Image 1 (cartoon, rainbow, N blue to C red):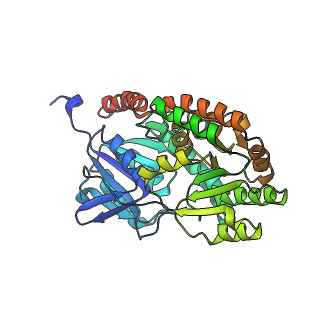
Image 2: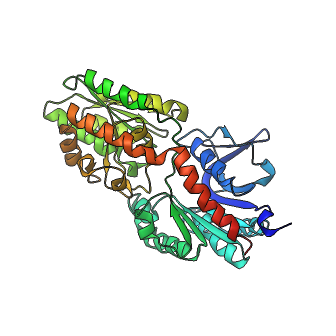
Image 3: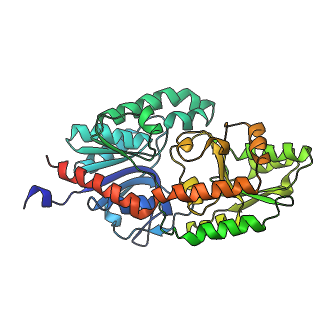
Length: 389
């Protein structure tokens, strides 16, 4: 058998939840899409995070290409990787040819070190900025942010390959010496012109003087998602006599904190919690909204924004991470700034919505599945050609 014909065994190390039930391997819809893409390289094994019934999204998508026999489950490591996990990672790595680390994640980053020891190739799949995530998480997060930041930088330096979800932001913060590419973590299959036509028709018929609907997709218990600042902005607008804005939140987790913020600002009737929504229903829900707002304090690449753009939904968001790669300045505000959110919301009129709907839909063409798969497969082909060299 020629080297180029040899089957490449791939191990994915991730903190994403994996559930094994009745002989089936179950993951979230987003994790499913990611794993399906890596199957292009070769058959997959996975070291994933143990699921205990608590997640901000549904863990119910079966990936039949992965056998339960090729799944190992461990807990997420926050400060250090326990020895029992190190031994499991070491053992599993030796049975594979390419190790893919879904980073930032300590278990995956440990996998980079182990891959070097066992002379295996390592691909960093970089989905976020560990510094921003930890610094905006909690006082404890601030304490460990520098250590985690330099750990991820070292991992990228030693990676043979790197796939970033941004075009510039993550590459600048965590540069690599290996083969690299920037490809957004998104899957857009429907991009017909009717979408923009329907959006423009909706804008023309909407009475903005009566009601404007906003939505955010993200876990409601994670404070660095920033929903509390949107709620505060609604409170400030109400104090000015403007109660047109209604805010819809899609995502799992405890609503207690955000409910308390809504009560404090006397906007409970304007804040609507939708809970976890199946991914298959999210596009239709976006179509019913006037604006998608993304107030996150940290972001590698915003899949939610690109998905909203593909529905010609006007978007406003913070300047966090790679978001400025997606949206113009008139749609951006500073993180943690309700006053700037108020300013952007006050700029919304039909001309603003139409302009950004058209721009978003046009730009989202760069992120359709057919376009991204072509680029991704070219990158993966280069990896496959180099694995045994």
